[in-house]
Length: 451
Image (cartoon, rainbow, N blue to C red; front, side, top):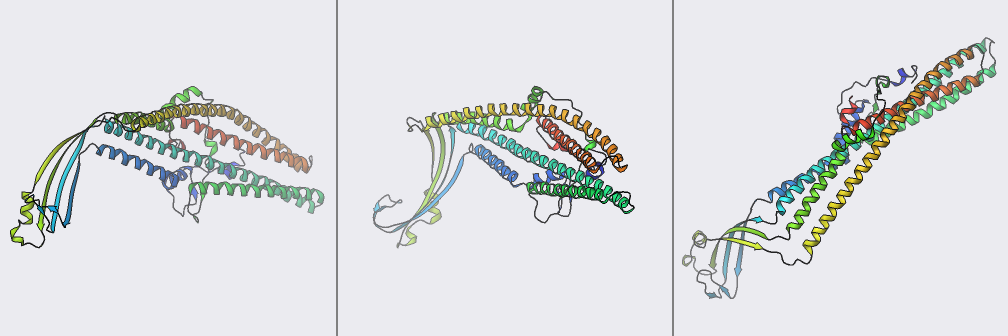
């Protein structure tokens, strides 16, 4: 980046990360990420899925506890019925009311409950890692678009500088035309160049505005909120790494990245679900107990001849305990089908994990190769910029002395503009690739954007 361009483009990135109010205009990268993490709808939905997995896990643990139920019913009888007091057949209208309290606990079910708890625990862990994946993907997209805005603003600043140079020469030549030292034709030539540079600047402004709008939409900022970004001091960002090794980066990434951890937890959960399905083939044993009581009254008879409500509830009280054994013999292929489906899901998760590992290795290999190639491009672009700056200074002096025409001056200025934009592009591209590789070794982007 030419030193003349730096004052127009670069402002130190010093604001702390925080959620911004509608009145704040300039956002840092940390501000954009913090706002998105707190307000992104997709991330909030992923959080709800994690919360749902946590509820399922809690429910699976509660399934180990005994249940407790209370029941009651009231009935009016007509015609033939049994009098519960005398156990005789009666045809009198009657009113009966019963109450029951029962509890049971499954003592053994082929360890299905224990394996379900384990499976739900790993699914919860997988959900937490999936939420991290969603968060990191959002951060990656924001970072990419943020630096796209910086690049667009850099092009705008470079185009504005080119326009300023042309306007300066137009002003100088106009003065010389007024004194008769230059021809009007020469003034028209440089005026044409000013017009072309103004068009280039206007186009760059439009591209910069479009890139900023895309970032705003990505952040899902409410309409009417003032929004702009603070530009980091790119010259203060040193890129000292000479290269990266794919195997060493992958060795770290395979242990820390949530995208692999999520599938690994899903695999462990699927293994437990196979055990749950097989548990359906084993006998189940349930222990329970109950308390019963009730009230009976013949409608139309004198209440004094019948026991009171409280007395009947006390006298009709009965208790029971029971032991229930269920041995599956034939279940229409249900258990076997569930076992095979669980095994298939487990094998599919294994293949998905292997596929994700291969994909990650390919991504890291491409990232390392792109960084190594990009670093060479960046070095060449910086050297080319330095050469073109000196070349343009020489051509500018010759133009002012009348030794070169407008065409040569415009060509030199265009070449300098291309060198400036290429130096900016290669540095931003290299910076993104560097952050991407560093992410593979940490699994988190938050710490990278503050360094």
